[in-house]
Amino acid sequence: MRLNAMNRLRLVLALASLFTLGAAPVVPSSTDCAFGPATRPGEACAPFTIVPVRLRSSLSQSADEIATLSDGSLVVQTFRALYRIHEDTISPLWDGRTRLPRPQVFYWKAGSTPPPRMPTPAPYFGDVELLGAFDDTAVFQFGSDWIYGVGSDGTVKVRFYLAGSDMSDRPTFAGRDRDGTLWFKAISKRSNRDTAYALYPNGTLSALPTTVGIAFQGSTGSVYATNDSALFELRSIPYVHARLVVTWDRLRFGNMNSLRRHQVGADGSLWSSSATSVVHRHLDGRFDEMRLRGPFMTISHIPIPFDIRSSSDGSVWLASPTKLVRITSDDRIEVMNVRDLGASELRTASDGSVWLRTVGQSGTVIRHYSAPTN
Image (cartoon, rainbow, N blue to C red; front, side, top):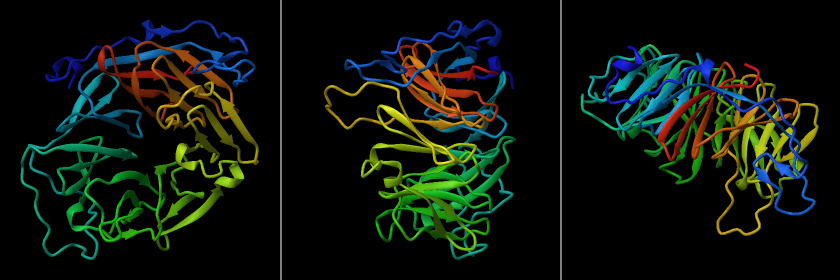
């Protein structure tokens, strides 16, 4: 289905060959920071280069959540539907009014494979909440009782009866590990604590016997989780457990881990962000801290750390209301000046490009940018 054939969506394509933002690479003064000027005399920020960025496409539509698939396409969640955007085509992936087809792979409720009595969802117009994606499959919650996974071709691949499990009704999807196990983070109904759950392809649901803070997919295909003291890799074989990757005291984080976000790059190195800087721990043990913003002179609320996203080429991306920032695997900082990003949600694609869902003066806009070297 072509873009101009979709009603309910207002799409405006920007031809990639006509939209290049920025100019020739420029090295700013030493007093500047990537996200604005330094706020104290003599405050040193990491050096960076201003580079052009190419806007592949732009569309204006209602969108609550986004996720990227392995082919570089984008899944967009509206209030009660999912759509897939690929090149110049948009196609529906899920509509709650359609009777649910039989899935190819079953992730049943724990303790029953298959369950003796599996409730059949009625064909009603239900709410959809996109939780994330793995490979070519978008994972979402349908209503309050079900978790589904639908492939890029519209095939239902995952179905799990959430209401009959120990997970609360608002889980977050962390990713899929190399053994094919899906990982979620949720509050346990029994213990009332945040933990990670492994959902095996045979339907078994098993909880990690410890509290976790954040759980996320790494670029290497592994799934990771944090707590107050360390970063762990989540393992499902031969049983659910967590392998220690690094403790925060070795990274000089102290007890400030709650004010940081983390990513594991394509080369296995660790990236962490605060509200002012990004830290890169290389595989050889080198530890580089890059200040991107001057310190806050006054604080009226808890500073929010930069949302960083790792890319397939080993780099990480960050966004602000007026800038995109890409930090390469060798710690070169590239700044791209853009307009009207507003509050941004950023996702990286398999080809090194980035998708952004922005809320600004122009309303909700989805933009697709190429990496500077693409």
